[in-house]
Image (cartoon, rainbow, N blue to C red; front, top):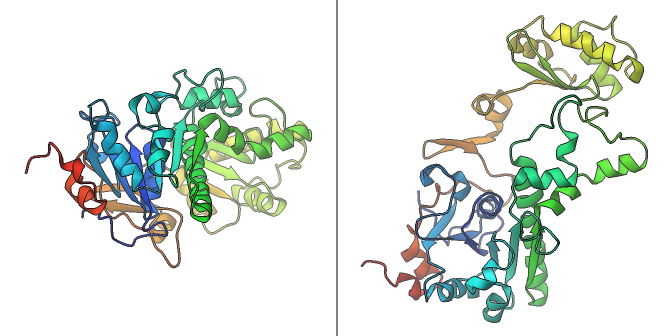
Length: 379
């Protein structure tokens, strides 16, 4: 099913977004806007600029439309500015200064559309000593202290895929920023630039931890705290079949139910006695290894012990709770997360599969009234 620019799907229906093609957090942020109902037009470059997978499977480009524009061609910047003139939001993820050199920076866009919200997605931000340096999720979260909180104390920190930096600290903060700026633009008529840096967002995510650190309630080392795997009743344990269970029995009533169902009620020391945490961890570890993951899942089923099986990516969609909620959906033969969050009046959906480069040029030219997009396109 093709995506149209006029269908009313989601609370952002009617909002127009231009996405200058990139990889990682920029496309994910634009996907979230598209999931929420915005008409997102992705400006792809000739030859493509996406993940090293077939574009048909790049679900971060779902619910979007695509045009191909060569920004290095003589008329390329003018075509992007034509789109920016008709847009509410523009998203780009170039290094600082690149959009300006290409002729589609904030100044050029605002000269055509003073109400435009210009969202900039980078790792280091638009300013600072590292602003023009290359980087990836792992380097950004390393400098913020977030990476240093993961893993066992006697092992290297564990990289949490690229979810923490790129998508949590980057994409989500960009979306919050451009939507806040859009509210301001609609109230005042003044657009602005949103500088969304992954280092800023990731640091912001650790606000509670910094408060605990200042209060003396958090040790600045790995696996020594309540929420970082240091606590024996907040972590993961291997089962008899080499799989894992996740435990989060923090509160007293949950802990009591946990040790009772685990069968160690008489062996478990006081939960707040830090001097016996190692002893408790050994007891819990040994007990979990006596049964398989599925057997333990059955034991804790329906309880408030805050215990869950650690599922793989392929297993997760079939979990009864996630299946009942429709947390995952199938579209075009691809199992993928459904749009989130949910809305009672303006529901969202996966309306179309990954936008294929240039496939929507004619429709966008018509819907956005930008006939010059059709130049060079065969009749």
